[in-house]
Image (cartoon, rainbow, N blue to C red; front, side, top):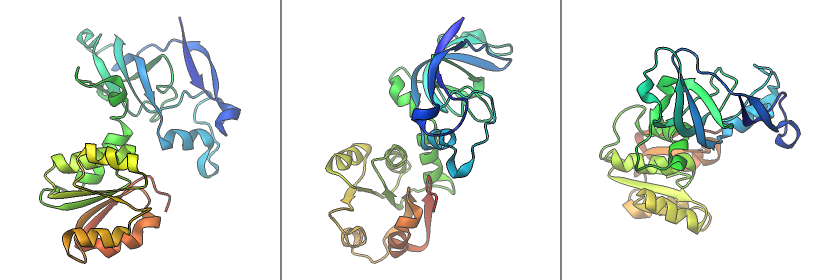
Length: 252
């Protein structure tokens, strides 16, 4: 049997290396499940790997199907995996970690431990975002302990990671969660996520606005930042003594 997929055999610009076609249907190895993919999610690491970021043009496999994250329904299981998992709605992550075949295909095989049950109340689009974005956000918020009672500033609060970070900080008991955005529609997204205050850094002074909200020079306990180098001076100006910066995705 065959399946449709996007794949590449060499690294470079997407328009030059990405192909679409039919490949053999993957068979789940022992300990694996095969998922019929409903939604495939693309992350910055996926595009960087395909593009040969920083000159890394070596291909670890002759052919790669991109995308680490996705969601779908388990339709087959390998040895040592209960057949009761067949038909289960799941979200999957790290599909291409040390492996060639990711989620940008009709089917994908992953270790059973990386196919996580998706509640019926969550759609497949939300499930596909629970890999790198949500796991990164959780790490940024809770890596060194609780944020209960803290003031948390999420820079880039409407991005995929920032959106989850705002929600998790609120659910984790933060006293106040602030989010920075660059556009009005992003402000609405951050508010929906639960931000107590939203600052548009294009029209407002970030440091002055934070200080005005709390009537303090250094009011922030924790900064979650997508652009460490660009925002470092602002973060240092706002952090309390022993404050924390948790950064991700930045090359700085």
